[in-house]
Length: 566
Image (tube, rainbow, N blue to C red; front, side):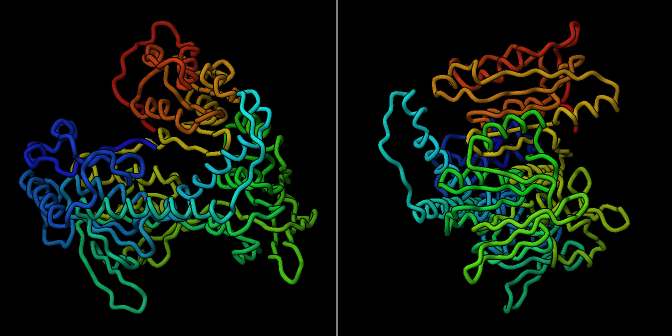
């Protein structure tokens, strides 16, 4: 994830003189709080245990300065400058940035702070994947011997592994909560509902509701696992990722319905812990959302070498949980003809068919907003649009609920973009610059367009596309780790030096992708990237070689005027 700095004590004078981020950054002092990624871990010396009184004082100074400058946050008779419905990663990122901008901010959370990512998604899953990575390494006798190491035996404690995931989620959840309290964000408990223009009602079931007003409202309610019709969930033998992260059992044979990010990561976990896996994929190929060339190589490395088989081009039309001594039954039908193909009998089934927006009960009917397949319609500035296609003033939607890009860090970036607009600085987020990663072993990461997408765009717009690749087998650091399996691929325009997409399969791919994503976001062309210096020996040299291998047409200007728009 990208790093974002938050100053807990930005000077009022810096904001009053224009609130420019560069001035605020220049005025930061050692000891101020800085948050990275999820913004949950304080990286500087300032304590997250700052008193509510101190936080309120900071917030008052910032609001006073913003008011004096005529910026948002001047009050106007509202209870809050900004109210955020949903305290996941997106809502959390928006809330902290809003306080930094001097906005009186409240966040409404009906479940637990951190949302899906922290409690039932990317955070606990990474704890399980850390275990699977260690198990794979210890079980790979050839790999160990090549490094001169001897391992007599390996094993694991299932409950201890589950506790590791749960403890990590609890720690990050606590960090997020404390960071908001320290910065002066009001955390309101209950389910939020829009009852009118700039009005929100919230409360717990069975308790009186409260109504508040806000100059601006952000909907950040996230998503829930999508379960197709015909599938019966019992949470024990047929379950979603929500249940799987608890690791209540490690079945001998598990079917995973869906071969996207979620399915791939859990196949990595289960096979490392001893399970056999069967993928059930509706499309004709596994990993349909990945660049085809990367998907082909990933299948060879992540699937063909493991105890995994698969069925493609089929739907799981009916799944019945195990009971009365009978196994889980999965009825497969042809995705095109809908004819019955076969019935699988397995010990468990994980439903990894994607996620659905959690947008019911928000009171959208009160403001003439109609969802589209459950998603709240928004424009490029995340402003909600009503049934007539008109922008609803002062109402925004970020993250999974709008469906633009269902990633936790995308939600955070959208939230920050919205706060920029509220603060008087127009900002449009380039979604093509937002990276994605699959934390298998080895990892997969990507940003921008796949090769087929880029070629289609080139055909429609009349420009040339080139592709260049580098191998991890040529990287000193990867070879030192005995992890030479991997490839980096870049799609670009030779006439301008613009990067269209980068895809990586290999050691620490999820970390390496950010050099490319930041280049796309900032509009940096290959002419400049070729001159960048990378430490040796590091994995970053995989991208260094990639950039240097690109052939940009002679005579193309080296100057960059502005970032490339999405």
